[in-house]
Image (cartoon, rainbow, N blue to C red; front, side, top):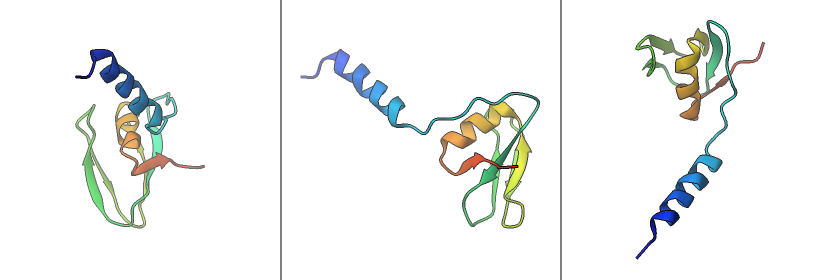
Length: 80
């Protein structure tokens, strides 16, 4: 039988292996969709809809949405 402390240790390991999301500041942050298909995403924090497609892979999004979207692994901060 597993101890409850082992469950907490597993959770800490999962967090450590998750992709690190850089802090974002300001009214918006520019992110890039890294997949070759079109997608419409509803921002989990704001409910705004963001559409990404070939030719329009980057756009400015609310920082609260950017944090969650980048954790998915399908987005990254866009370079200048």
